[in-house]
Amino acid sequence: MSTLYALAYLLAAVLFILGLKQLSSPRTARNGNYTAAAGMVIALGATVPQLHFTGAGAIIVLIGVIVGAAVGLIGARQVKMTAIPQMVALFNGAGGGAAALVAVSELLQFGSHPPINEALPSVFSIVIGSVSFAGSLVAFAKLQELMTGTPITYPGQQLVNGLIAAAIIGFVIAVLAIASIPFSFLSLMVLALILGVAFVLPIGGADMPVVISLLNAFTGLAVAATGFTLNNFALIVAGTLVGASGSLLTKLMSDAMGRSLGNVLFGAFGQVRTGAGAAVTGKEGRSVRTSSIEDLATLLAYSRRVIVVPGYGLAVAQAQHAVRELAELLEKKGVEVSYAIHPVAGRMPGHMNVLLAEANVPYEQLKEMDEINDEFKDADVVLVVGANDVVNPAARTSPGSPIYGMPILNADQAKNIVFLKRSMRPGFAGIDNDLLYDPKTIMLFGDAKDSLTKLVTAVKAA
Image (cartoon, rainbow, N blue to C red; front, side, top):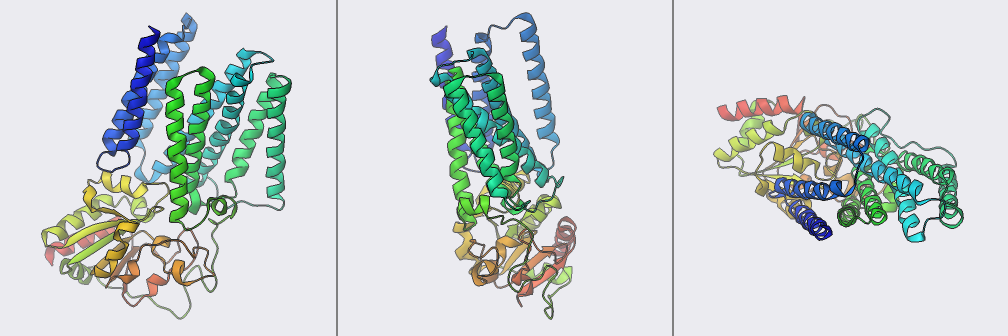
């Protein structure tokens, strides 16, 4: 029977790896989820028979499975596309918290002097899992606007965080070298939870995509450590895959912002502030150009090439179906349409890809920044829908700007720029966008979905 369990875990691990590979492409991402889910079902099916539950224990586990499955199914089915980042943060935090609790349970069973090979993974899982759990909850609160999205800082903050970290190290040594008593490892968990909160508080909303991917890596590492504690091959493989992919994604997201990971985590960048010479409501003496729906429809209908730049405003307005309808209409008129996806557009890695895929936008039209940036100069129109900082030329031209050095989409190189915005309010970086005042830019104010719907009607009549 143990051989069958080992083979089941091996099959689950292969499915996890294959699923992760499929997630690397929008075309195969949906099947990747199904593949990984099948691996998890197999892993659970191989694990449960080995637990040897008593009657009461089996009932508790069954209740947990039913409640968890119901919450996950209902939550995933009903969540709005704008709230996907919050859901990811919650699910990720739940994984880290579960790993930490399992590690505590194992330490309670090991006794006061567990072997180092058993105690070390458990202690590691408690610390990293608790940091991930608490940090993910703070990230959720920031994204859900239950608390301010700006960095929360105070004098001596780094010193306080350092003291918390030192106390954690002290309790780790106490658990490993002296005695594994409940007071020690429960205190360790509490301190790690506090550190998780303190870790995310000074990070602003603009940096949440990086934070989410980093916390995801933390959860993966905690799960892998728990796998070592339980001697569970499937947990080790799954956790290692999540930890490695989350770490790589964090590095890629930091590079996409033109900043180091240390600067993201400790630079308090995401706060709403103004750069040198910038104003929150617009620069005095500068005006923007507007136009009628009919004139914009004519410009789009008679273009040779149009590039759409989606942003968080598209998600807020739930305008993904309207932009796809407009694109299909333009294509029928012979216009070539593509979408420029910035790595940090939205509130989580891949947010725009998920949003547009949900509207059945062809995968071939979704192009990453490095792939499409050289093509903007050949575009007749760039249609910016709800994006801001990712097309702000200040990232290239203003050394005093907080986004200076961040790679951006070269929307300013197009022949015409049509900008859909609710108002002149700045993006997360809190600075004025010079692209709004470019002579080539035409502003269309209002809800993105409503504006796109009107454009669809006007293009049909053009």
